[in-house]
Length: 398
Image 1 (tube, rainbow, N blue to C red):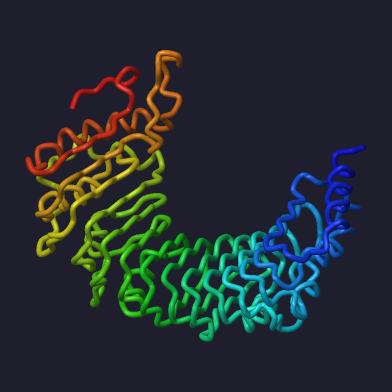
Image 2 (image 1 turned 180 degrees about the horizontal axis):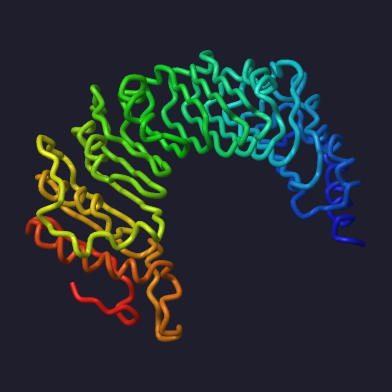
């Protein structure tokens, strides 16, 4: 008996002997089942398991099969008790409002083939929905989150490659997590939004120009942007923002980030991660310290902890670090990580190469820059932590 046939027979035998009464949770994972005939049982298995009283339903299909979720199994009273629905690698085509999903609180769709209209049809009945998580739903080009989803507090939209417009009208979202390309994002007046995590095109400019007005109560921002210059000061401020994490891919004038720090007068932690290119390394070793730019008129008196990962010898990066040291009265800890961020040390069992370090020579230059331009500016009240390349392989003294 093959592995696939054995799986099919075991599941079929179990469900034939079960009336379905009393089932609260049903998880069906076809990940390692490659026999097409097994999917012929899917509708019948779900009809047995999905009965009044079921609360949690998970279906995981292999990514190389064209399988549709049988929506009729959720009709009538069968879906009225479902609170959690998670579908992976299948088509989901609700043609009419599934009104009996009125108690659904979590909808999680991973790599599911569903259009924006079909999802809108589904959401029209999910008035109790609290969490909506979408990943890789590539047929969605337009996504509207309707205002009647009053209970929706968590929205996640990741890697929906054809999405071009996301419009939110749900008023009580607390956390928003988005990763995509050139997408127009409108969060509406999400006054309850506290946590924002975004990776997309021109996200720094979006944070500066839009968010202080539409979502003024943010407490945590985590964003990722690519080679984006920000050289303007917002006229409004994030009066509740305490934690900022930024990942920047490519070159940037890092000193321009001062305007974002200034927009958050209660900011306590600032975490900057860098992904740089080799042709931008080593520009500062011979720079005269007197030529470094200074920005006056800014104070960051609540800032306590700053971390910069993949720190390298960039003039504007040293200017930003110097500015923070000189204008942050409450600063307690400054951590500068000159490695690739993985923090793995080579050991006696390994060769004399730092196998973990992708940029060892640039990291060594960064340590020298810290010694020359930054170490002397650190007040005695601030703990300076410098993560260096392995000294056994690349010795350098601070």
